[in-house]
Amino acid sequence: MTDVELRHLATLTAVVGAGSFGRAASRLGYTQSTVSQHVAALERAVGGRLFDRPGGPRRVRLTPLGEVVLTHAERLLTGVETMRTAVERFRAGEGRLTIGTFQSVSNTLLPVLVRVLREEFPGCDIRLFEDEPDSPDLSAADLLFRDHRVAGADVEHLELLDDPYLLVCPRGRFPGAPGEPVDLARLDGEPMVAWPPDCAQPALDAALAAAGVHPDIVFRAAGNETVLSMVRAGLGSVVLPWLVVHAAGAAADEALSVHALRPPPAPRKIYLVRRAHRTLSPLAARAARLAAEIAGDLGIRGGPEGVRARTAR
Image (cartoon, rainbow, N blue to C red; front, side, top):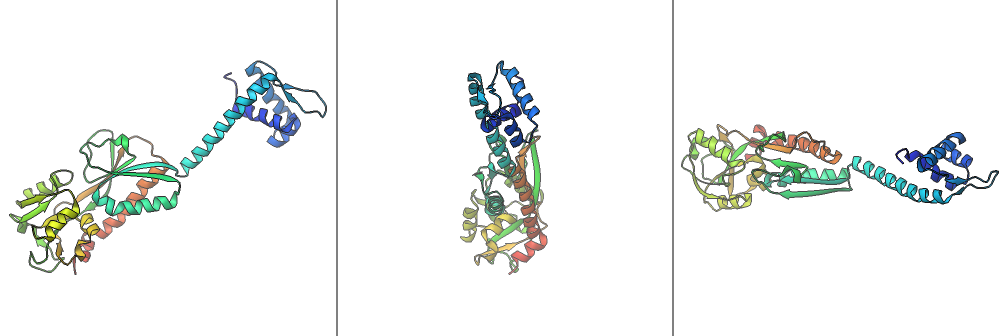
């Protein structure tokens, strides 16, 4: 049975439908001798005759063995057609895409990414989860957005953008108009709120300490809105990445003042992470390209000139 070929099965069903080898040949675009060869090869493979051939204009008829083979041939050919359709849909971007994300990306880059993907691939199934474990399970997602590098040899990082840090403080806390740089040294001993010491926060804490700046951390919280609400309440100031400030509309908040820092701390880096040496689906590959394009636009707007333009009133 290892010699059975799909084309032979297709010829069998064509002969049954047409009633003769000649008419089947016309439908398939073969010569009649080719049809005869396909049927003969299939008969050798199954070990018996498949058709009774009465001769003349009368229709050929399946033998009992032919009936058995036809039943399975139709199932196999239907399965192949189903597979072909599924492959075509897969190549067209249908299927599931699972993306891991975090607050800043969820509020800025990700909505644009999802909207464009759904416009381009209406049949796609996009699943999102927001979680930031130190050692994420890369098998649970096609793509992960991270604001720090993920350890491991089987990890590939695509650096999307630099996300510069800004000072957000209660209006009037520091001299100068909103948007004017504040000396980094002014934060030494200053009451500050901050994120918990995980993800990108340890790198910022280390950068401030290396510059001799030791703020008085009076409150830590993971939620961006919670942190900013404490700044509005006057509990302290906060140093946050531009993406967070931009998403929260802090520059337009009358209770807040947003400033660049002088000298600026090293920016937070946003990465797209995936398992290395794995072929992406067409949908995931398109998502990765789109993420880089959208991040490039955000990076231009969040760069030094964009920061000055958006923090100045």
